[in-house]
Amino acid sequence: SGLSDHDLLDRIAALAGQERTTSAELVAHLAALAARPSLYAAQGYGSLFAYCTQALRLSEDAACNRIDVAHACRRFPVILEHLASGALSLSTVRLLRPHLTPENHEAVLAEAAGRTRQEILEQIARLAPRPDVASTIRKLPAITVPAPSAPTATSAASEPEASILTPSPPRWPIIGPT
Image (tube, rainbow, N blue to C red; front, top):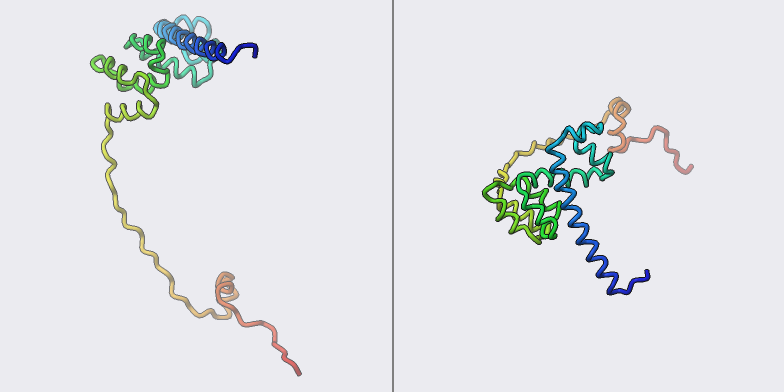
């Protein structure tokens, strides 16, 4: 509350930069830890996910994002530079990971830099187009309406819904004015 408006904005920008750098460092270290499963196993954690959620106290979503990106960084270390600079986010790398190959990763990552989620999804659609959904036409079953039958005294008593649909004669005598 003691910061001027200008100082507050500067401090927020500096913190965001530090967070990107720290996040990239964490991912790099998780990539190294993923290559040494005996380290977290010796601490009593059966998986890297368990280590991240229990020892590091990351949320499940944060752990999944960072582990997934760590695996991508082991294959393509250039991702760390993009994360640290803010050109790519963890979510962006996680979306692109299944589509990265040794041949295309540099071009794909360069194209993705600074893009929105929607633009990344469009890029993925270009990288791995899905076939059009085959149109199908299905014949609907014919609707048959039963022919109305005249209710009898026994059928009106045995079928309550029929008496609701068709008025039944009164069961008491109608007495008019005398």
